[in-house]
Length: 325
Image 1 (cartoon, rainbow, N blue to C red):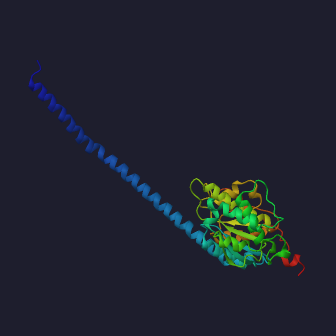
Image 2 (image 1 turned 90 degrees about the horizontal axis):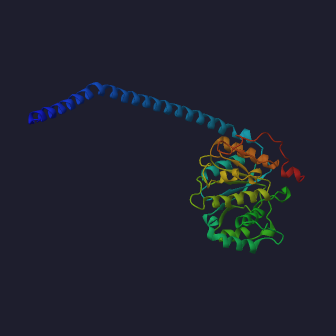
Image 3 (image 1 turned 90 degrees about the vertical axis):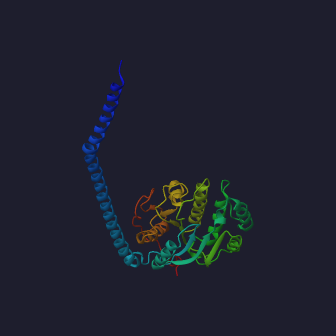
């Protein structure tokens, strides 16, 4: 029989083996593991510092480029839009800073800003479609006919565009008597706000995209509603440029992305996704000039952009030259 002393010796041997293993593990294995961890940490720290240095260098280069473009902008855009009137259209969530900077460059390009229209959240509220349809039916001129497939936003965009822009240089700066009362009715209904006198019609329009994409189940529907507005203004005037930033173009509900993804609208409406940069505001002016020549393009650095800026276009006569004055 195996006596108690055998069991005791076996147990002692097991614990001795465990102790030897622990000692070997803490002496022979600890140093290599710690050394590996330390080397990995040092490498990650070094890589992180290198990336930070690269980022700082890129930021410095970008700041230098922006400063150069900003200083040269008056010369780069001088007289590009002489004789043109431009309407500014702000959307819910668009940047006031981007709009103000763009307006300054438009002034430097020789354009006159006819006024500003700010679409409200109520304009986009699905529950307001009945109000939109009612106003359009009540206020549209008798000769304004909509396609059978036109949505509430298509109809509202056509009516607003007919009130605010024109493709006839001889009518620029004058009100459309056939749509008298449209702006007042839309403003009273809380659908938009007006600044200056946009009823004195413009020849071109710049629409500012929301800084952030719409979210939720209705995101693409809301972006599509504003797409209808941009397309409506382009059809009624000498051209429309949608200005914004490239941050969210790849996301559903982004207005610039919606235009670029629409094969038909993108042939007519131009987009600039660098409007928060001095370079982008110069491109905006060139894109408006290109619109006057009957062309459109998608410009910037985000998804769907086809070039950084338009190719050179032959300047078209200014409205004053066309009217013989």
